Image (cartoon, rainbow, N blue to C red; front, side):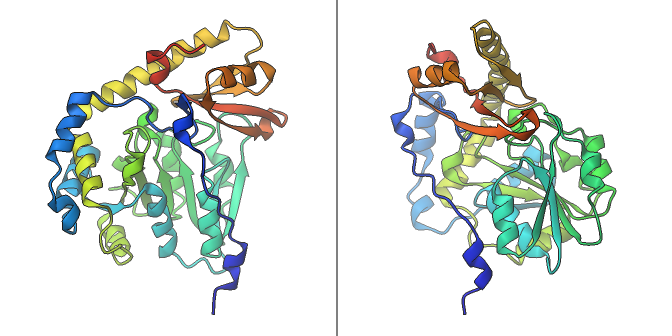
Length: 335
């Protein structure tokens, strides 16, 4: 018999034709390609066995461990699947999952699939107060999940704030999908002290490999052993693994791109601020908010930009564009 509660799970498809836009700024994807000679070198490195054989992922795991300076890593096809796998670990009978409002929409989907009640603690401004989430912990709280930096709001948490959360003893996921797109400190270094910590990461955002669908979880040895019981037969494809190895081998190039993007975002905000009728709020991450009005609508149409907007309750219910800055904007003069 089909599980009746699945009838209530809501999923959406993204059917947007991204090639029809000059700039795709909806999902923090990389618009500007890596240098052609490097990409050609990567393509030349692909072997037929990367397609015809099941992948050996040990080299990628080794490089990730070196990148994050942590020994225990669990590979997943995207960090969203990593989060789903963590949900699978826990019995949510009469249980609650604590998170923030706003948050990654898949938290709600996974809570619905595994029959947990998702409790969203609201923002009161552009910086979430960790203590307000701690105040919501009760005997039904089975899991806590927050993103650092958080999307869509873009605020970040210090390690001291995260320690306050971990000190409560509840299994806690720190979703670091956007960590490379900010100056936030990674929580990976806290794993040796806290057995209740899971950190999820991805190659999709700052590292520009969304099409590869490669993510990973860092936690202590015991937690990774438990996750391995839920492991897919082969976590990612051979070509995806090879490209992510290439990224880590050339990380200095990606690091420079990320540094330049944060610097240029600040300059771009200053340029926009000189134009009339633009209201802007900056974030701790690589994006900012642009108030949705006739002027900003015209600006987006003229430049053929794919962009999403959201209503911010703590800003009197006003609607704002989430402007994910990309270096293509600097490369091609935006109107």
